[in-house]
Amino acid sequence: MVVIDLEGKSSIADHMIIASGRSTRQVASMAQKMVERIKKAGGTARIEGLPNADWVLIDAGDVIVHLFRPEVRSFYNLERMWGFDDTAEGNA
Image 1 (cartoon, rainbow, N blue to C red):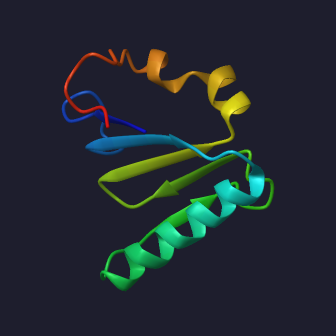
Image 2: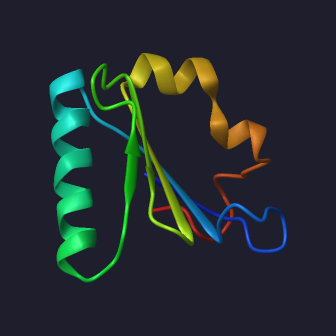
Image 3: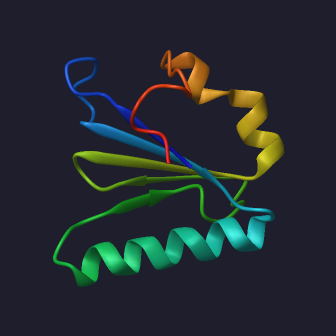
């Protein structure tokens, strides 16, 4: 799991979380559980990509979450696109 600080870099969100599941079933389950917990805590969340579950995006306002299958995550490589250095603070 990687957390990227977007504050000052983008107006879409303050933080981006990128994580992987081992299969489409696991990615879908992770996404559904995350949206359920966000809503239970009083937040709002929109979810995209759940039917295929290769890449699911959850928009929770100030936080954007990308959940991938490993092969899809490698292909899109969002960490590199956003200039994330895995030695920097913020990775988990």
